Image (cartoon, rainbow, N blue to C red):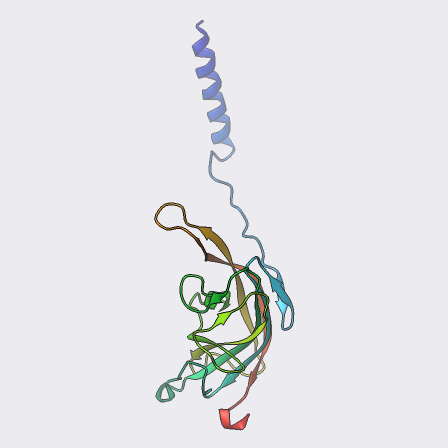
Length: 195
């Protein structure tokens, strides 16, 4: 009997046994669970240190960069987060290295309508290395989307440092991916004049 037959018979037996136990179907891989943080907890990545401090519903907020559609009953969802640039160069809130993607609402991949500095409402803004800043992430939301007393879940995303090799040179941050969730109680501030 030729030696090649042994290899063919062995392969056939292996495939028959494999088929009997479910075949060569891919094994389901469980998605890794993200760390669960609360207000005041610090999340650190290679790019940023992010601490979500507070979440507020408000009718309008001058200087936030987002104007709600009052005819549709929209309000503003405002998230205050302490953000520190850990890179060795300034980061902008605009452009490819934007940190606008660093804080998102759970279940919604759209970034905030605007992000500004809390102290002077600067936008677009630059984060200097190792200088923490309190930032205001703002979304226009529908009248029934969120309510006071609910727990708001946010997703903090980490960016990867991308080094250009073919079409461009230099380094940029991108490929944001979920890294942690933050649960924060939602407050209702009413109108801006009530604050």
